[in-house]
Amino acid sequence: MEIVVQNSQQTQNAQKVDNQLLMFTHISQLLSYMTGFGGFLIPLIIWLTKKDEVEGMDEHGKSIINFQITMFLLACISVPLIFAFGLGILGLIFVGVISFVLPIVNAVKASNGEAPSLFCTYPFIS
Image (cartoon, rainbow, N blue to C red; front, side, top):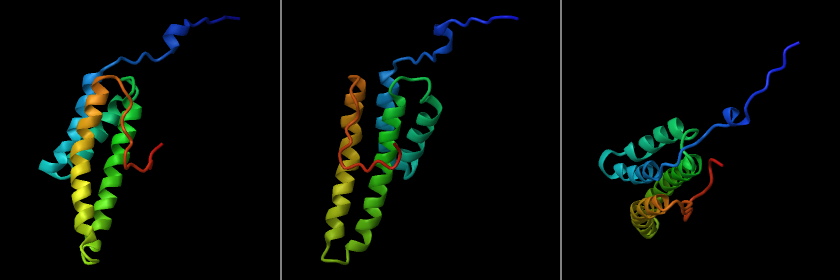
């Protein structure tokens, strides 16, 4: 009979702290203004590949994806509302401003090691 003793440190997954990657992930959302879906795909790829390696990436990645899905749905809802007294135009302006400002705010928070802001975000992925 053989008894195997494992070191508890070897069984734990060590995650590294990389605030610069978290900040880049938030800033990469601004690619939507140049490429269309780049602001959704790049953070998604970074989140899926690094969520187990970088501390805080899972939380920040989920907030980014939830934010991008929420902004897309708000924009889709705003388009038909253009015909309802122009309310859709206000909605599109709101989506445009929030989609530009919030990634920058969250990038600054990520570089300081803080949790992301969840303003105007519905938690699709929790």
